[in-house]
Amino acid sequence: MSNELLLKGFEVELFTGLSNGEHVGVSADVSEELPDFVKEPDQRNLEYITAPLCDYWALKEALLVPRRKLREWLDPKNLTILPASTLSLGNSQIFERSDLSNPYHALIESTYGTKVVTTSIHINFGIKDLSRLFAALRLVRCEAAMFLSLSASSPFLDGKTTGAHSQRWLQFPLTPKKVPLFTTHSHYVTWVEEQLSSGVMWNERHLWTSIRPNGPSRPYKLNRLELRICDCITDCDLLLAITALIELRVFLLFEKSNQLDPLIASRLSATELADLSDSNDVAAAQNSLDATLHHWLDGEPITCREWLCNTLHEVMPLANDLDMAQLLVPIQVVLDQGNQAMQWLDRFSSGHSVEDVVRKSIVDMEVQEISIIKPEAVLG
Image (cartoon, rainbow, N blue to C red):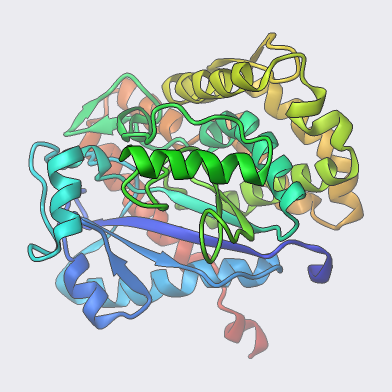
């Protein structure tokens, strides 16, 4: 089965701190001692990147191995990995530079401040055929709000509730503010060159949006789709479920482009589709599964939960054919029990403090990782 699947890889951002949820920045030290990790401009978060793989079991291990190494490094220092995608118990008034000599970090701090001090998961799918790649970009962008809703995990900031389920997505400085629905590769190239020429984008990487094409020499040589909208997902099984759902949607698109390429199938124009997708993303950041979204087919309102249920139903025959149905189970669990942000807000509403909620989630995350059997243990 793995030979039929797309190559997939993850860019994983994490916060570090104390077991009580207080943020402690160590990314400069970690990146020096653990080569799997790179430092972000603010030292309170760091990142690792997995190699592209097809098989989902291998992907799970690729996600967990760096986390195990990081925990081994953190443990003697009485530090741990913190869940959430914003500074839940941190200080968002102060930027804690990881490298005072780095001019790019200085530019980030002076331009955006702590709006960028967040953690997320970027999911990459290898698609070399450019016409297929841009069709996939269009579909996934128009459905990105669903994936944000499944992953929402940032309802707190500075020890308080924010009124949103994904505060990260609401505060992160999307750049440029308006991004079209790309019709072709040449459309994308021309648009990026215009943004660079005008200075709106500093470089080809300075396209901070829900989804973008990626490759060895952007914007000219592309080979993958990068979904950037998801909050930090600490549950590896849920991350793989979201990844599998997107992959199945892309496969269906390849089979039925007339029905699933928004540029072909929608009643809306490309400009209207871009605006609709952006407004859906904001609505999902605010209320996640309970949000009222607008479907890209006709612009009609639909709840996020209903849209997800319909989407699961649509992909299930193919999931069964590819022996991927079991991978999708965590999505149904989220639909039944709520995402991480919703569960945290429920605990907060029942009388627990933000610190209590975060502290419990830190323990739950550690227990979940410990319960996962390593491959060598299975092999004996």
